[in-house]
Image 1: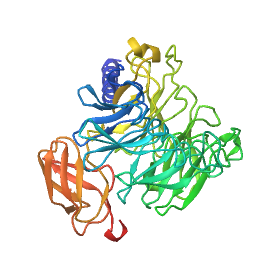
Image 2: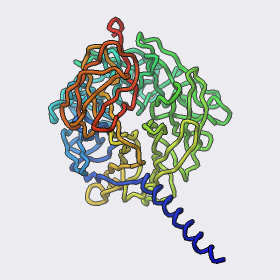
Image 3: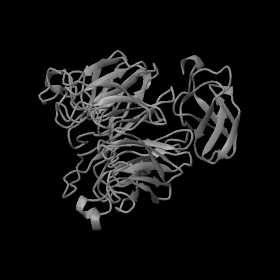
Image 4: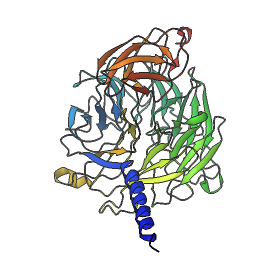
Length: 489
């Protein structure tokens, strides 16, 4: 009996250490509250720039609608550009930064024909309209752009295109564009093969093909929605289009319905994604094998999330992270929507990480960003600042951080290139870098700043991870670098 108190104290002490470690490994922080003047309704996620700061767009704010914004690690937000309508309106997609430092993006509306634009933002506050959609070549590009391995930009439009498709103002298109604005329409959806690709940007998989989703269209036999329940598609670099999967192909739509986000490439060549609805009515997380077989990994129940509008982010700890626009147990009056942040393992293990309560944000839409510090960052379209004009929208939105205790890494601005080409590497605390290698082959490099290294792809290298030695630490790249033969670029 005399030993029991000591053992009990020891047990309680160990439990407290475990709880302390667990809490330290998962820290949620609200970093920014938008107030209208610095932006309003950040629909899209953020990207990390060469200078280490975060860049993105807000759908509202400004005189007409939408801004390009910059945020730093000190919770400061700058409005870099306010759209006027003639140059675009209502950006709902993330930006992409090219090696020259300029940003490219889309607006859902505005431009010469009011059907949206593709733009280039440069020298921080300047903007050039590269293309105005005219509905015939597409309309309302809600998704972001992808820099392909051929150096061209790829994207989708939600509307326009095929004149025989009248549902939802046209079925939408897939396009390719040079960086100086020459646009080529690669595919026009016809409804049967998919319709209305929405928020999800295209991805280019290891096989070189492009993959994406449509929120409508397809031929799912269980679909009860007029116009179809959505698809997954593939497009080769030469423009050969294939519908890989029709949602609501399983009894009761157990496989999900209406994917609004794009796909994420995971381990072993699997694709991961989300659907807005499904058998439960709350949405799903799915996995597609390389041969096109779709498996439902998670069916949301509302308490753990509802309507996962955004896609998934594969972090360097090997887990996937995402958000749900609605759901959770908090009542965000008067919205009645709050939203959640969650984690899922590649095999389907689900963990709820955070439930928004309006004061720290609500209604997250865009994908999460893992910064090179290891910390995850995201945006909420509502919540936060509840005064002035923001009170009319139930808040103008927030930027939040989620620290899961993941270590730092480096990221190539483009994870592909030819031998002899210049590659920019992003990171933090890079000033004291002493070595850079591509798949264990040493490379010439120059430290540009604390957040950027410029290096040359060495001869004799093959596809593999980039390593940067800083002091006694070796930082690995989040993605393998792909060496492109000159004859195929």
